Image (cartoon, rainbow, N blue to C red):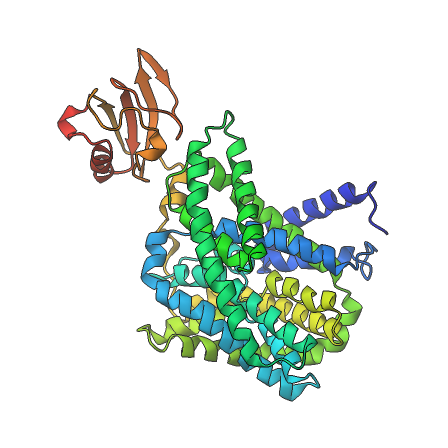
Amino acid sequence: MDLTIENILLVGSLLLFISIIAGKTSYKFGVPTLVLFLGIGMLAGEDGIGGISFDNPQIAQLVGIISLNFILFSGGLDTDWKAVKPIMKEGFALSTLGVLLTAVGLGTFVYYVTDFTIYESLLLGSIVSSTDAAAVFSILRSKNLALRTNLRPTLEMESGSNDPMAYVLTIAFLGLVINQDKGLVSMIPLFFQQMIIGTIAGFGFGKLSKIIINKINLDFEGLYPVLVIALMFITFSVTDFVGGNGFLAIYICAVFLGNQYLIHKKTILKMYDGLAWLMQIVLFLTLGLLVFPSQIVPVIGIGLLISLFLIFVARPVAVFMSLIPFKMKLRRRFYISWVGLRGAVPIVFATYPLLAGIDKANMIFNIVFFISLTSILIQGTTLSVVAKWLRVSIPSEEKKISPSEKFLEEHPKTEMREIGIAKGNKIVGKKIVDIEFPKTAIIAMIKRDDKYITPNGNTVINADDVLIVLSETKKGIKKVFKALNIQEFSAA
């Protein structure tokens, strides 16, 4: 069946519906939802029962880039800086040196077991060198896996920040495959250009986005998430246009915004959580449609060999070498090695050789797809088991919940105070979002002129207002008084 304007909405909505229903029950059988999304796409494809004809790597790449924007941005927004800060060095080492070592190690192995040239082998290694943010975020969170101190932030930071490195290596080695006369030294300027510009742009657009979000004063709350989407794509496209790494820029921008005081932040976070899931489903369905199972069968042998080497040799060696300077228990290093999930990102990167038209592009794509599939099946289904075996998991009731998760889950508050605002208080005339209110407390209502109003981040504090504040703890109330620049005895 060919996709036309008349049936694309019907087919798309049916596939989406089937994926959601299938994902709902998948973990009862121990199967990650991402595998089901891929499987449904393959079944709907030309080689499957659906018979949908889809052989357009360019559209698949476009869908992949758009989806990765949402997935990385959502992961960045949900990253707690306080949790990430202690493991910044380890995360940076894994997302840079770890990716490079994985690419070189696997590429060297591929060179000796296939008829690929050294540059083609390193290109394949680069494509699958990074852990997949979509796979790691979705599997860790859907399994509700509670890990010991700093381990989970390390894994999520690595998966969210190592795609830029893999992208740079993929583009660089693809250029070397196309232009055989160039040497490895030509990669160095590209690497520094991409990383430096991407980092600067990420912080710059993050600060600019915060100002725009808090100062633009839109009339409708529902427009704020739309505004953030626009800012996200501007960050990515402008960074890419000036020669920086757009994926790195949007991740840094999102981490910055996620740890700032923003107007309607709750609405923005909830919307991005839903959109991230939508984009994961769309991305895996699209890539499933692009794959022809009949073409995968011939590469199963070599694909399995490469995949097993990646899982049991290349990834662990890269992790252990990257973490040599840091103090970390051996079992934690082993677990980080095991959570080296490959998902949709490598498949998206594998479309670049297809579009470039290099000789072995189809074989590379099929091998990469098989590696991603086996990685999710082997590693994704055993995360909980391996965590218990290595004693890095904790009982779910001991799991620490981030401030954003607490806020979104709307846990009942245990402390309530009415706090009066005097005329001389310096917060008079300020918006709530500019007060830097504690994350563990909320202003539920404001009593003003014998009327009660429901505030939002854009609400301006007036003199003689009485703030009805809810907090989870008494300590949180003390932070509220400090933020409001008043003494506790002045409470109404």
